[in-house]
Image (tube, rainbow, N blue to C red):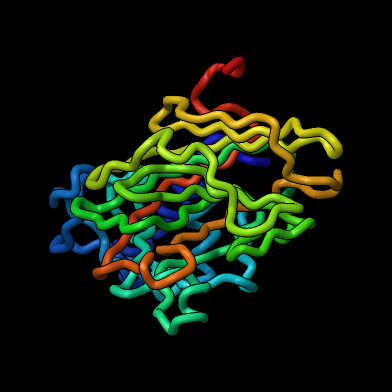
Length: 294
């Protein structure tokens, strides 16, 4: 049910053919458009950005995902870019306007909301899943205090200080100077999300990083859940003894594409207009590019 590689190559080829034959699709590649290479410098021809719409979501994210509008935002801050040098051939660029922060800050202090949040459900649930994608912070990116990055979720998920007994989430997060962590919400917890493995790896601006998490849910009544993280194929963090659920009916249901600055107050906000690029989402029930014993 979950392919080893995300299923977007076919749609990309179809779009390319349609562009050449009919020139009717908005955002087809133009020779004058220039992309940014892995080191943040200009290199190859890239397609003009295309606004992300609900109809584009399944084709880009692949893995049979379906979009759930409730709780989602930020389509207006998200653009698709066709780029032969990007992992998977195109990427999603999400913008964070100057002064923007989390929805919590926007509600409390009137700040603008930047970034995007999409609840993307898989065709079926599981108790063990691998999620991998590529992320690029541009050269000169200002990390400030931190911000959210996509992860997995189950049930009602969890965010904004709202822990639910019928849900969990395992988003990544960047912190000061690009330090990475898993920012997790668990049933029965209170306050902010749990900061797991902070500083066990770092994101380097100006290059693509391939980040991956393996989430194994616990047996209800036992603290035997785990999270493992790889960066560019190297294991950088492992956390055992976790409790994601108290009910066997709760499973991993989807991808929590959640990204914004913050944080619960304006001091987390982006100081300038910024963006982050995302590409090549892969979901699987087995190890990705590594022996099963690891």
